[in-house]
Amino acid sequence: MIVVLRREAEDELISAAQYYESQRPGLGAAFLIEAELALAALERFPQQWRLVRNGVRRGLLQRFPYAFYYWEKQPGEELEILSISHSKRHPLYWSSRHGQ
Image 1 (cartoon, one colour):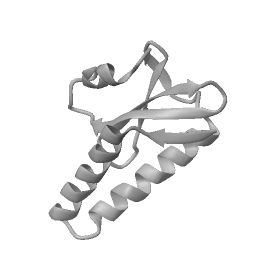
Image 2 (cartoon, one colour):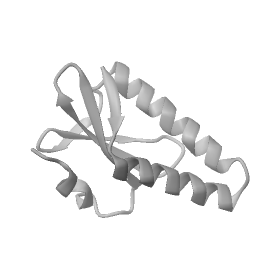
Image 3 (cartoon, rainbow, N blue to C red):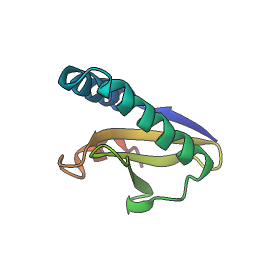
C-alpha cells in the first residue's frame, strides 16, 4: 500500500513544520519526524483510524495537535492524504478535496 499526499496536504505539512521551527529550532524537524512515523504506521495498518465521513478516516499525531484525513483511493493499493491540519480547524474543511 502506498501513501500519497495531495498537494494541499503537503503544503499544510510544510507550513506547520515551518511554524514550529520558527517557534523553536528543531521543533519543525520533530514535527516532520512524527508525521512520517504516523504515515508509516498508516501504510501498514490503514484501517486503524476511525471513519469520519464517506470512507474518509481521521488519524492523530501523538505529540502535536494535528490530524490527518485520508481515504483508500485505490482499495488495497493507494491511500490518499487529503489534509494534515491543526485539530482546532473546522473538522470538515477538507471535504471538498474528497472526490467521492
